[in-house]
Structure formats: structure tokens, C-alpha cells
Image 1: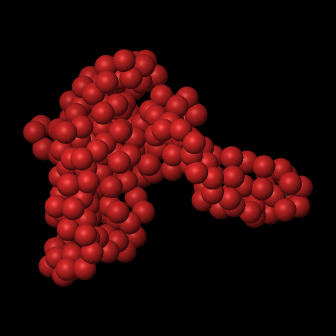
Image 2: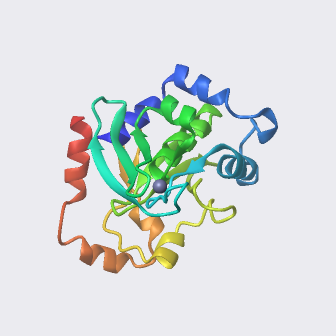
Length: 221
Ligand SMILES: [Zn+2]
């Protein structure tokens, strides 16, 4: 399971040391509260990372490109997205890495790469951070701040990127079943934090996998 692989990298001191070296000193290395998270969230989104659009256009022709999905051939590459222009035949590829160092070198991705790397950055600054996945189409982070796990999403603009757990349900019409948080040795059901419609979520859960099944797969990895 991808997120177990990531969580293990979050406790690897060599990886954390490397990731820590990428964060400019002035961005803040003394992060203890929500106010100090602001600068690193802004820096990461504005200066460090690039977003990879889902339907890229050819840079030369400004036309939509055809898409091909290629399975990854190593544990480092999950898969490769290949885009080709039907007019000029130029090709663009987007390898999806599960290795934090590779993501840090390419500095590109979508929510999975962003959350995997941003989580590593916060962990490298000694802010305990985990990955959260909604099993729909998005993932983000949670950081332990003053003893409480807080919503952190580096892909969103500040201040929405911090402590706005209902944002997705209110703005993206999310119909959650399970929102799960991954640490190197545990899996937590955090759905309640992200919904104001807990009754409806529970009804939805009557169909499909149960939490125990997710937890069982996770523990066996
Ligand atoms: Zn073209």
C-alpha cells in the first residue's frame, strides 16, 4: 500500500535530513503553532512545487493531447502518464513517484506528490505529520499541533490550507465513506473530522468495504 511506504519514509532520518536541507532558513525552522505554518505553506505552493494539470495542452499547438497510462516498472515509479500531441507528435511524460527524494527533485505532481513531500518537510522540521486519503480523489496531510491532529493541505491557498476540514465537503461536494490517516504503524479513521453529515456518511457505509478491511490490508503490508 502506497501510504504505508510513504509513512515509513517519514521516519527515515536520512530522507528527512535531505528534505530539511531544501527548506530555506527564512521560511521558518521553528514551527510550533498554526501561525508559523503559514510561511512554509505559502513557500511550498508558490515557490517550490509545480502542479501537473490532468489534461495538458501541447505547448506548441495549444491543442489537447492524447493520454496513455503506463504501469510503473519499479517500486519507485508507480506509473507513467504519457501525453502526445496528435498534431506535432511532441510527447510529454509524467512519472508518478512514490519515493520522496524523487518527488523533491522533480518538484512536480498532483495532490499525492504534494502531500507526500509536504508531509516529509514538516516531519523534517519535527512536526509530526501524516498522510490523509479520502478514497475519492484527494489526499492531504494532518499535523500534530498542540497535541491535536490538524488539517493541512499544501495544494490549497492559505488560509484554507490550514484547519479547514469541511472545505472539501462544502466546496467540492464530497460524498465521503472513509477518510483515513496513515502513520508508519497505524491507520486511523478520521472521517468525522471532515464531515458535517456524519449520519449520511454512516448510511453510505452500509455498502462497500468496512474500516476493518482497510486496517487489515494495511497491517499486512
Ligand atoms: Zn503539438
